[in-house]
Length: 214
Image (cartoon, rainbow, N blue to C red; front, side, top):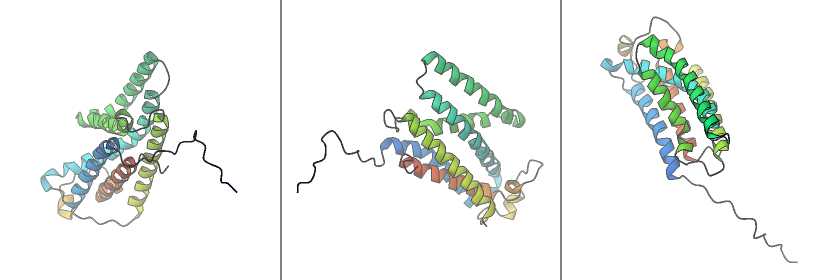
């Protein structure tokens, strides 16, 4: 009895390993993860402001995960270029006004710059060609799903699990700016540092494999 031969029209799916584009997309997230870890392990007394900055960065990333989903889908959509440009400008203006409130309240420009840097980072995989041709929309959906999943999981774990203070000692806390309010992140800022480290590390590892596990 002869075995049926495979049809020549059916080509084996090419193996997709870690590409140079995937490494390029993961590098910014690995750098952010390193910044959170370094600040968690050895915060400098004269740079305690970095803790506040990283704390705000995680809040901006929450907004960024939301905004990049809409902007990414608009970028890869089939709508005519004039309409696409108008939609991107409209979305950009909306989120710029929203995040601009943070900058205005702090009287500093860096939150706005950081937000757009995070947005560019989240869209980097498509912009540098990590997504296979014709699969840009699917890749963006996977990126969004992975980011949301890791953000929610990281927030849950670092809120409930016992975490070491590492370098965030009482001496460091004496210099820490609580911004006139209270809360878990402000009372125990090492939790948000752990959160940022876990989140950006997970996103970077997932990016290396194109989020294909989703």
